[in-house]
Image (tube, rainbow, N blue to C red; front, top):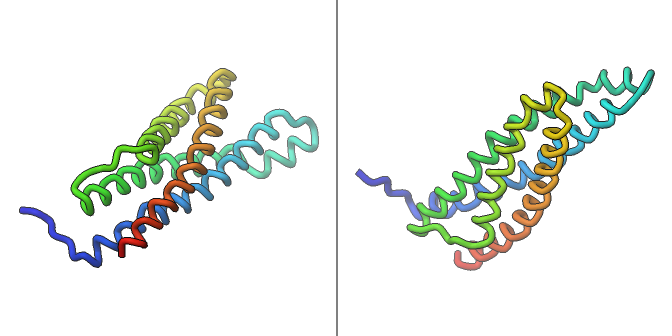
Length: 156
């Protein structure tokens, strides 16, 4: 049994991945802000620290990071699935390879959480490095993704 989709559904499926990923890019920037606030809280002293703790940046950063992990992986797989459904193949190129790299980076970054919770500074530094690399790749992916969407729109 094969699943046949109407041309209209196949066309509109093309936009699920880019819209999802743009939302996740914005959420990633927010997560970076929260992470910087966690670092600021960790380094603060006295009254400033007490005030920063009230922001619960560590909890919010962890929660947003968990959401990003789930939806980035799902969105990447979804993008590949839609490409395959619509074209019968994946287009192996910089956008796909960087996307797979992003999935790997976020998985490694999340895997460092137990070590960071135990106070391992090496894990914290690695987490920050991985996430800023991820954010840079994500920004580049957004630009290359817009180019892909433009190609889809000109074909229509």
